[in-house]
Image (cartoon, rainbow, N blue to C red):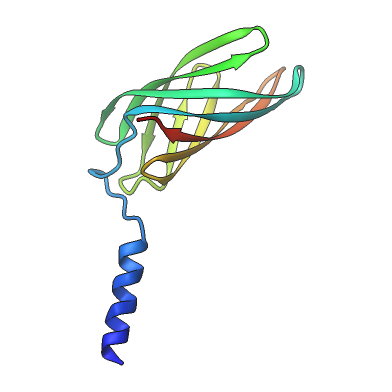
Length: 129
């Protein structure tokens, strides 16, 4: 019985991702498809690429590139996260990002802008190798 308990405990611990400040690395290129809804332009989707160029401690700097009908757009962003990486926030000059590091190679994000032309977008990105 004791052996079964230890085996089950080990299996749970081995399969549970553990994120600490030192193990959270967002640096790199992340790509995926986004879905967006906006008051003025309506719904649209398309590719999104996040490039995190710098990470110092629990802060990071990067840029998000997205494709639109009018062409590609790229904007800088700045972010920070809690030591365990479970809460990740970012912002650009117009809005706010919320990130969720699903695993070391999968990053979900949602973005929101308010004002006269509000919009919201979400995507699942995977780390590019």
